[in-house]
Image 1 (cartoon, one colour):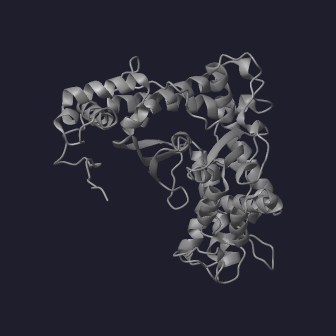
Image 2: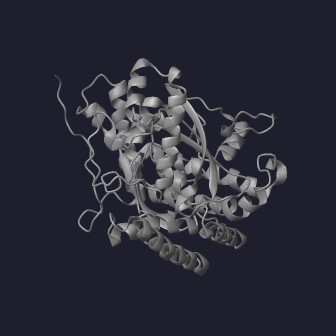
Image 3: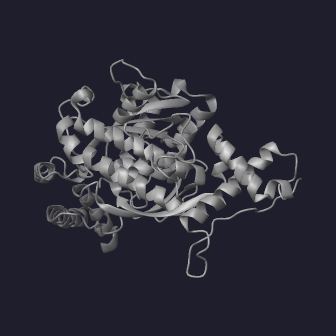
Amino acid sequence: MGKVEVVARTFEKNDNNLVGFDPEILQKDLQIFSGKAAGICYMPDDYLSNNIHDEVKALSRSQFNAKSGHYSVYEHAHISFIIECSKAVAMVLNSTRLYSTSEKSARYTFMKAETELENNLYSKWKGIFIKIIEAYYSKILDSKDIEKLAMENARYMISVFTNTTMEFTVPYGRAILLCGWLDEFAKHLDDVASVDSYADIFPAGYRVMSEIYYKRLAKEISELADNMRATINVDKDNPLLKDHKGMGISFLSDINAIRVKDSIKSTAPSVDNSDKKNYYGDVYVSNYRASFASVAQLQRHRTLDLCVKVDPTVSCYIPDLIKSTPYESEWIEDFHTLIQNGICPQSVILNVTESGRFEDFNLKCKERLCTRAQYETMRIVQFQVEEFATYVGNLSPLNKLILKTMIDEQTKLVNNRCRFSGYSCKEPCKFVKYGYIRNV
């Protein structure tokens, strides 16, 4: 067996270690490190040799690779950003897949909204849900659990532009490319929000979502790109890396349609990712409806691809616990009050197109088929398992065996993850333990 050595590490900025965080020094150091990685590809020498570690030669190699589009040598070093932004912006960042994120949870922490209207509705519905949940589950949940579930549901009434804080870690090369992607994404968002030429993509709800979502997102994304660029010292007019492959951000399927159409200089009518048809097999495409809040969780499964499109009906998610009760009409009324006041709540429904491999979907089930997961998300994943069961003939023999463990043989209902074969749950569970069916 060959040797294994640590040749680099991520280090934390603190009072005693400020070297390397000046943007100019940061960029030079990371370029040199990338050039050393390139030396492995092109040089016959050992990694620790003088030829590879010569800083002038390493810098020259890294600059050559930047021009040629050889991105991988720029992905050995990672940068961790602390970003204060809206939830809407965080979702765009989290759609880029090659990252690590730690983000303030709206399920478990009190989120202070921008407007008095949102804060009032959040407090109102939190109080209502506490009373309802107590009536259903007071025998198995303590006051802290009940409050968390109430917060999980009340946050549907606050804007997707509510501020959050996240640590966002990406490879150095991805950080540079991301600045350009964000610029392009913001431009297309602004184009769609300002010009009628793309109105074919946006039926009835075009104007509404243009005002409360697209315009603001464009502004915030553009500001984020400028701030990230300043932090890593990459000039906008002369970026170190250019996206030679036209990768970009594909989070919003309608914006992605415009991006791809422009990149291939097509004059054909605009189409988007939501045109993909359902298919459940070893690879799959699954179309469903979900709120902003649920998509924010679902997109964190980075082995899967999610594209979303705002439903033109501008409708909202309604928690099961209040469906067919007097609270349902009140919930809808409060939702439309927010829309009319120019607020885009997290309950806004999106049309989602998810695609990936069945094996990776199975990993998602081991995260989301749980009473501790967000209820809306759990129900979506249950629906998808049922669809796979309907089209089980499309699966390979091994994947058929995996699917079999997801479904109870007697009841034919989808199992919680704790009942999966080969899965050992380490988290405390109250609903399943006491035989309750969670509906909140």
